[in-house]
Amino acid sequence: MQIQSTTEPKKKGAENAEVSIPSGLIGLPSLTRFLLISDPEIYPFVILRHKGEGEMDFLAVDPSAALREYNLEVADADAEELGLLPGGQPPLILNIAIILSTEPPKITANLMAPILFNRQTGIGKQILLENSSSYSAEHQLDIQVF
Amino acid sequence: MLTLSRKSSETIRIGDDICITIKRIDSDLVKVGIEAPREIAIYRGEIYEKMKSLNLQAASHSAGGIKSKSLEKFLAKLFRNSDSSAPPPSP
Image (tube, rainbow over all chains, first blue to last red):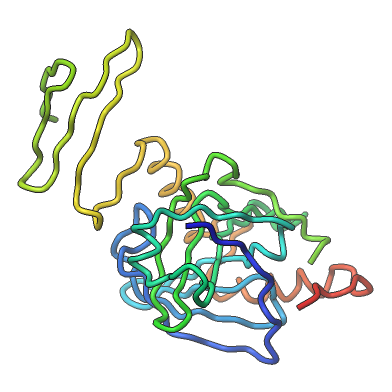
């Protein structure tokens, strides 16, 4: 199933949403419950705060702010698992980001394996794209653009 | 690790639900078919390790000594320092 990344509407204030990733992150299957912290002050970044033993924060980014075109080829099984239907409500797409350095700020995003959330159920999955070889796992974000 | 030798078109069963078939053997390349329940994710090994490694890196935020509570402060500072005359992204 093909999915396009579209720009998220900018939120008015900070919003927190409880989301779940039942399969966990790739390689980290126990991390399933998160608080999605969206704050317009830090857009296009959001924070995925893992709830549970050992609270930890994951930085994630809305890829539409980083790339003009991000075409996601998602396996049908993955789309079905999340309840994403062609022509239905598009999923929330986030990419896990890593801060390489703070001075100067260098942040990379994993474009090969985005996290897709069904907006209605709040259930998500980190999915290795079928076309993952078209993208970098360590895509350097151009901070100036934000 | 269990090591088995298989010829082309022979199979390996893992539990009751997973079946591996050797599809083709070339001198330095093996084509492997995998049948498994759809809830079991299948990755090339090096890709799995790369994704896992990046996820782990993202959690620790060891670069610059950033800990969980400082993350929001770092990001807020990042945006205060960036060019405020740049137009915001269009909705």
